[in-house]
Amino acid sequence: MISLLFILFNLLLVFFFPSNKAFTHPEPKIWICEGHILFPSFLPKQQFLEYNWEQQLQPYQGKIMIGGAYSLVLEMPTFGRWDVLVESCTCNGVFQFLQGGGCFRRDNFWLNKNEWRSETNKYIVVHFVAPQTLLKFDCQTLVVKCCGCCDNACGRLPLLESFSSLAMTISCQYPLPIPPSPPLLPPPVLPPSTGEYSSGCWMPFLWGDSCPSNGDNDSFWLIPLFLCLLALLLILCCLLALCIYWAIRRRKEQGRIFPQKKEESPQLSPIPPPIPSPPLPPLPKDRKYFLQTNQLKQHQYPHFPQLTNLELTILIKAEEIKD
Image (tube, rainbow, N blue to C red; front, side, top):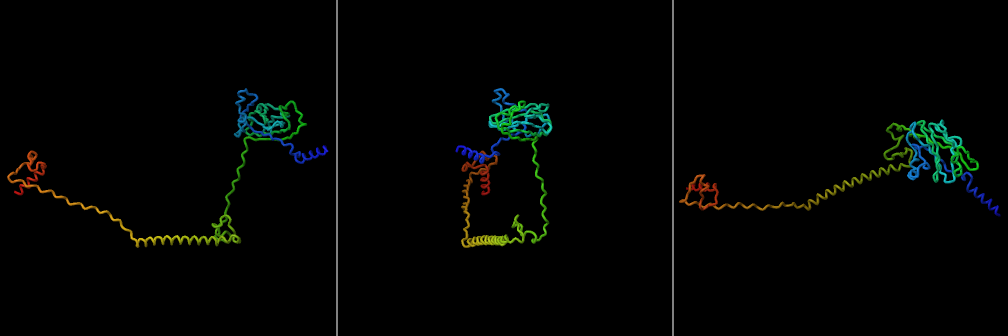
């Protein structure tokens, strides 16, 4: 009974978890960084705490300069269950700097190789000097289901046959390839207009892009609808003109029946006539003074002590005429 249950359990595992899904592995990634990346394990404690590893791993997107310092980075998530082995790696199909189970081949361009692990990822970094302006890397990797079995594999040739593994090829190219621009199509050439509606569309301003042909009777009912709307618009315009005319005429008639009172301007009060001054009393005949003009300032009439010199002169002349 127990053996039967065990067989059924294995069948269920095979049915729900087939072999092609059992080996789900992370995929390694490869790119180039500018400059020679430092490793936290080789830094002092104070610099290790201040070291920003993620900022150093930013992919480079500029132009490659011959003789410039760069770093080739290979990253793969391990999660404590996976490892990666770089079996070989070439640049531009000529420079092979990794070979024979991950052994590094040093020369004037390829300087050193280092491996480093974080909590979840494994990094393989190669410092190099750019030999050409165009770099294309092709690396043969082996993803193994183990923990740390591929670290520093050169020289010890680990036995990986007992672990599940999968060979993968990863590559990258710098500078980044520019996607081709879409081809420029010539503008469509419209057929010449013949001035007839038999071969084309009747009233194209009404139909727009979906212009039916003359034999299409499904949309023919739109033509009488358009004519009805046009007639309705004309009727509304006529009614509006009649309403305006009636309003103006009624306003004129109301003005005739009820004439508006003109505003009377306020009348100004009449100016009173000037009050005539009382006549001057005549001088006594026995008291006449015939004075010169330069003597008027010293002598005055006794009856009019406040008269001016001019008034005194006029008064004397009047008395002379009377006499």
